[in-house]
Image (cartoon, rainbow, N blue to C red):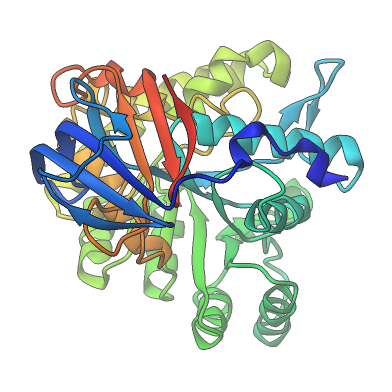
Length: 384
């Protein structure tokens, strides 16, 4: 059934493709000028200004490695009645998740990490088989959110998630089934989760809002801190010292505010989200000053899929990030954080994941909204 959704872009591409560029950001902070990228199969085989014949002329555009969003929820969508759905295994839920993946790819994101629902695995595997158009998908498939579980039970749960084919572990540093049970997970509990993941060769992403939550997650050896809105300078210094990746999100509060009615948000929730924008921008600036490894994640849910590039705009305009720093966060550094070592850089022997924008995001960050070319592993999905 999934094969029926495959688009015409699945048609075989030439084995060798030459792409002419006048300006390319290499994903590591460098700029290539007046050259040509030679793609053979799924990889960049050469960077040669004399390569010919030219198959795609991207001169006048800005070329970059395919972007990477380290925090999305592909299954979240608004159904036909406008109601929020966070995913399931029914055919319509699979179709909605697949459509979100397609929109994300066409927006220039060739890799995403979905944190996560079981349906992510269905779509991930269909994309890998070539039955669906979508980005490279890494998924946790579920979350660990039980502060009452013992360390042994948590380690067993990590092993179960690993056995189901998840790519990483997502853990909430505080939680519970209701308000009365909501409490922080202890250092030993988080160490059990993140430590067992490490034993299994998996990464761990820790949802943390308060300073205490973020600090205990870093101390427990979790790979990345998601959100970290209230992290103190002391905790940010700890992140930098431990090499933990930091994933603040600005698209997330904006998207909830843009769709407040559809999410059924109360006036209090709206006010809290409005305040969180300045707080998130502030912690991002402080993290940059302390040389924390800041990656590019949006926490894209319903209403945000295909709009992931708005995060570029918010980070530059509201957090006063340098455009090149944001590009590196969304390319080579994001790839490093996910352990996907073959992408995120325009260089020989890297995957041919390539995006081009109409305009230069280093001069006008809104150029990130104007994606006109997308290639993933040597296949073109969008070209004007």
